[in-house]
Length: 111
Length: 117
Image 1 (tube, rainbow over the protein chains, first blue to last red):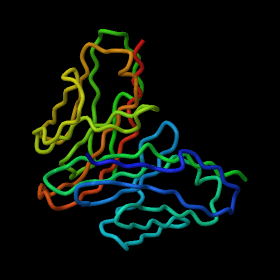
Image 2: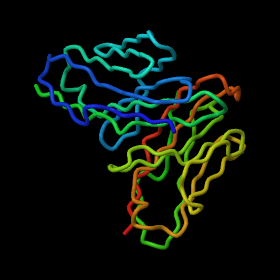
Image 3: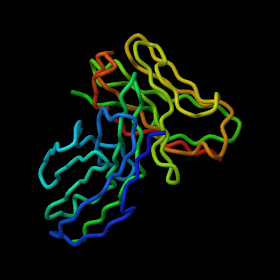
Image 4: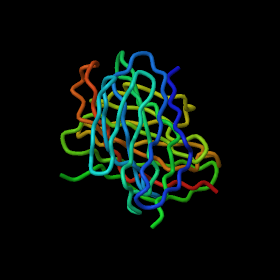
């Protein structure tokens, strides 16, 4: 069974204090790994898709990396507006498989 | 380009009632997926529709059903509501070529917050 585990569950950072969020996964052949950001009361907002180990993608203060067993979302010099829940999801190969989500990391950035 | 829209945004129902939620995908997107999000379980996959056909189904009871129309709009229905059905119901659409080996990013709507009393 495909599984996604995110850690930590919650993270509190001072503004400017860089850190990383972890997404460990087990999947029967990875088709894609996705990162989303979700603000309270809203739907998830797409950030990145990673397809193969070694791949990296960046967007503003965020950088996502992928290995064969995990993905990291690095946040450089975060600002209070980066506060949100960050969700990781995987999609397995083979047919039209659904996304399997982790439970997310709740990030708070304090000014 | 307009995003995924969901109606209604909020619903309050009582146990035993039924409810219908609606989702309009991004223009040109042919696949619509539904998810249930709760604090304890996170995001859980309900079902996916493509070209008016259910292509995938998660592990939910038969009280949860859905359909897709020819314009790709989708509805989901929950019958005989239970207290545990209280959740945020999210709809996501993707372009999906229909080719199984291609990955399509799913874009989410704002969700419908269902409260069952």
